[in-house]
Image (cartoon, rainbow, N blue to C red; front, side, top):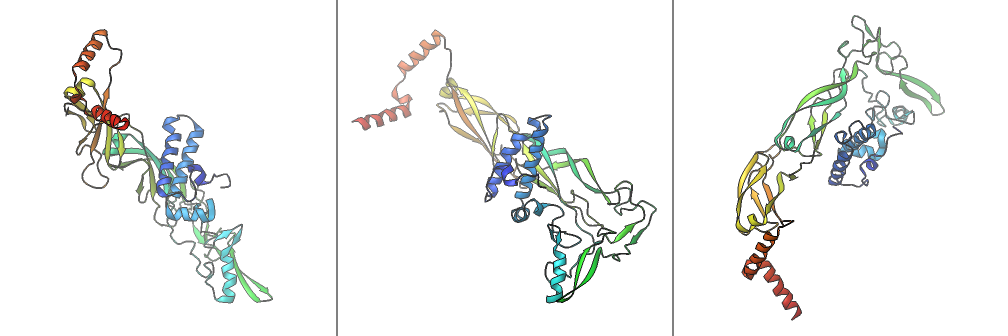
Length: 382
């Protein structure tokens, strides 16, 4: 944990950064270090993992609050567990402090008197994974195979931690509580403190023979492949939450959730804004002047569109319903097409003469914008 960089520094934002600022910083950094752009680059891969870990914490209000208060320790999976129920800092168990104050004030400090049963079910931690999508996959939805590294219940011992056929017995030292209580006499009277049981390490039970697969832990860490459904309309930087896809619970507790971070690769033609799609279409000077039927690419394939006579550079038209499926809703956004008029280059002498003749025969009525512009200039100098 001391080697970990500050999460705000990893994303390049201030501590008071808004959710939008965090999201923009995450997108920028994720694209910069994405493994697809740096195949075989271990340093970029580690940077990408750092960026995802930082965003996973800072995008969650509760985790961010703990991180701001306690640093990396606040988002450690063991944070708050202390030693079998007490909070710890610097090797001192605040559960013990609760026991001490309980002698004077009747408990209620630091959780004293409310020790968690070491054998009680507890929820597993959340896990995270990444998925890389094309623009079309994000727009229309798809199925993708991802790799997930999480903790599973041991298949050999079924989570008990004991070798099949062996016995599990209650710890004789702590009698199954996972804690050892000591009484000390002080000038203020007798005081009791508690510590984790050395013999069972806080579990409250002794394994006759630990499971050979999980070494008695009851859980193992594995990397598995999983196929997930990508909803149509998902956007870059969003997170898909899959309930129960995280680490297995302890003592029969429920599994944590899986958070899948989405990265969408840029498209060579389309750009996205919400559920609308934008693109530019180049047309010739002749097509703009005379009008023409052109072909426009969309997410559904090519469509024909008639450009009206006298179309100007920068004119924009809308293709209704040709945008992106609205996430978790019916209906789609629109597609906006911006006209780019190309000026011909490397003209032949004959082409130049034709254009000069056209210019001589053109009247001011053909150029409304230029006429109005020069009228303004004339008024300015008069």
